[in-house]
Length: 335
Image 1: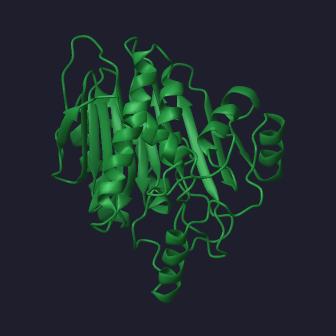
Image 2: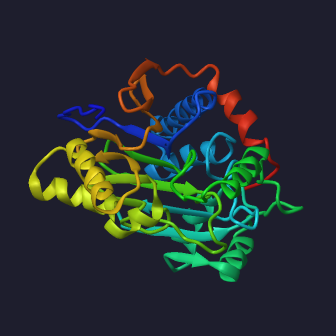
């Protein structure tokens, strides 16, 4: 367990992100740590300039969607046919407004489309031709020619999966997410993923399912999940963590640890999450070998990758903006 609890008399803004739960090779951990640290800083800067929590979590997730080290956007894993199909969701804790999508292709930033669904579609969840049509109506530009989100790393991973016992629980895994709270206690959460390597065409995981992969409520807190989505969906952990903490009067960190372990004990698989409660306390929990994560509060950024990994550094701004631009434009896209 990573103890990152902090009691606050006055809410201090914080933004926390994760870069996916799973088993990560040593050579890829530095890239993931750079990516989550960058995402936390970018998202926090939105809060620092009095931007909304929705904008903050969207911008944080966009950074990771543009980074090849994460299973979201550019870097997404491939389905059995060798294509990228992505899911995403976002939730506003003040209004309970939500936006979810599944199966989108050739779009660098699904999280922005999820927010557009929340704010402009009149619905909560879009898929298929209707999703594609709505995206075009809202001015989103799909990559042309198609297939530009497919990386060599994803191709190699699919080949390895096909040559293995084809277990959905092997490999690096992934999903990215962000949760934020501002000084007024407003909370938002966002999650984006490419799913799992070798998934069937049309498979939907926990990421776009509100209460399973994502949840936000100003009264309770916010959560973003990662891990074995087909199992996470069965226990609705995002909501259960917040509700259990409320009903028992316990802190969110031990509740998250216990519920993740209970899920694994009864159903198998592993998972991880980042969370913020209504007082601004943060939680990082995972029972996978790795989960990259980072959060910024004030002038300090904390980050880690393994269960006992906890590092802190000053949140200096002089280099991360140029790095963000480099990663965002690795793939040509207006959205």
